Image 1 (cartoon, rainbow, N blue to C red):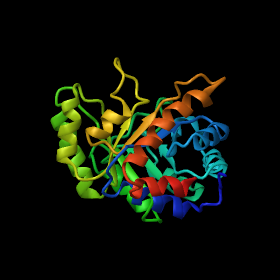
Image 2: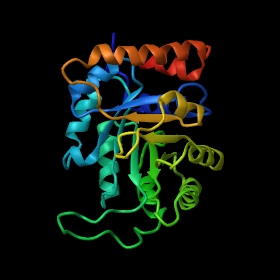
Image 3: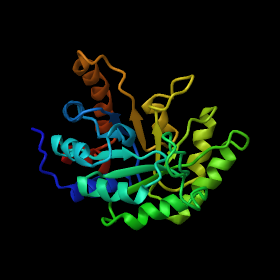
Image 4: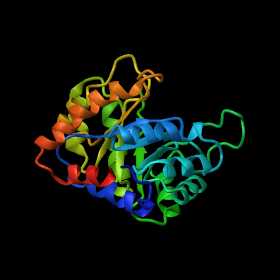
Length: 260
């Protein structure tokens, strides 16, 4: 039976532990729009849920409701919002386990105040997020901006700067070839997350293949039929659970069992 009594601090510690020196299958997070969808993801055996800040409104109430709805880690993607400090404070109180942010602020579409001074520096926003964090187990991840003229080399350089500044994980963009994943894995010594919800012309590699390429977390879009998702998801999760069993019951498998 699922329990929602796992405290936020414990969820954060479990997620951090599961990512430390990870081997075996990548953790699977699913983007969800509501608390009900989060509960279904937990019942299907996924490792966590992903929320986009742009869909949540200006307060942490929706996030807190989703955290209360199921026992898994909740990851919130802030994207390029300007007020990182306030968002991190709200989300930590709401109980999230991980926060992602773009390393550059995006212009406000409503034409309000522009990005704060220094926001073009790849580590400035990370420093603000780390300064706002109170629980050291709250994971802070960064998505490096990739300039079209620089590509993978620029992404590696920016990611290395963020690792040196204290990032807990890096959000990997979609390389043009699978070799790009290998380059990033060899260049960086912290967990790597692939956001498969990002729009692209081609589908990403399968979760199994991404794990083979050294990726640690995969965020899946909501692609299954909303009217009957359970049967389809059970087939996907059964495959993942079989891989856990073959892994010999390591720390990742134990963490998943503690979540249930």
